[in-house]
Image (cartoon, rainbow, N blue to C red; front, side, top):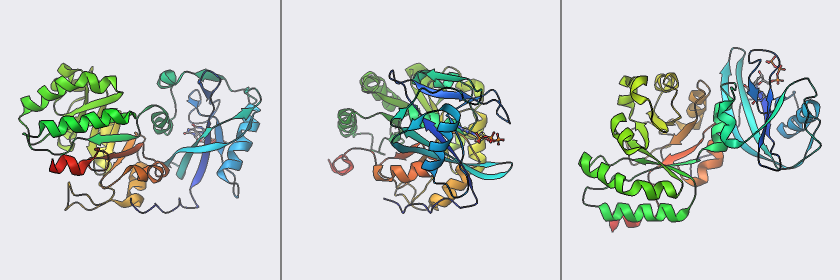
Length: 329
Ligand SMILES: Nc1nc2c([nH]c(=O)n2[C@H]2C[C@H](O)[C@@H](COP(=O)(O)OP(=O)(O)OP(=O)(O)O)O2)c(=O)[nH]1
């Protein structure tokens, strides 16, 4: 587990936002009536006042704006951002219970939206990571770098991932394998992975992913050269990023998420300088894509990752089940 990040700086403005659900599980959005994002939809809330805790601010804002009194809350994600007026942070909370019927007390329109419809609503950029935290897996596993004769070990690992039963993205990356063997095994495994709720992204070419009907992961060298038109019709697309210019490139291609790292030192790239959480936050603040933190991380790092604006963690060792047995057996 990595060291916890230092707390956000005190000069950073905080905006709190609440995820409220109705009896059918629909989520409440409010339409902004003024300012830069007028007309866009957001998770209800507003700016925390000096000296106020985040919970106090959320309680006050939701009472003022919606006329509801909230019960327990839990942190979902914090999204550090850099705006024209300096650094600020969107702090989103799941609201476990509330009293009262939500109504737009400031003249704003409200909508209760089924989770799978959230992305149909135009939102401010900082909300993209919040919506992704609600909808997409927090864990992004990468296949271990097994030798080409280790099919059985790989399939055993997949069996265990499926048995775990938790939502997952899985990058199919087998650099030591013949291309046709790597793709042939994925074609044979794809249906059962998908049936288990595992979303597969092929580390490879757009055409290969299109033929298989799976997602695509772009290595950073490919991120630099790929054209948007080549990505047409693909499921989820992610990319490897290490700096601000790669993040900007990924944003310009409107990718679904990126992997940013290494956050801590990792055996996969022993010579690479770790970013650390502070640098991760600084890079995250300049970009509004969902970002998985990569490099030396394990599931216990998830709360720290979410507090730094990460969608979750991406890992080979940290997420591949029973790695020791796969490596030796
Ligand atoms: N409440 C809320 N605000 C959000 C979200 N996403 C996002 O970018 N924001 C921004 C819009 C505003 O600039 C700021 C919220 O402050 P506010 O609701 O008190 O708005 P305001 O009119 O006083 O501020 P401003 O637009 O004049 O800057 O955070 C979100 O999901 N919920």
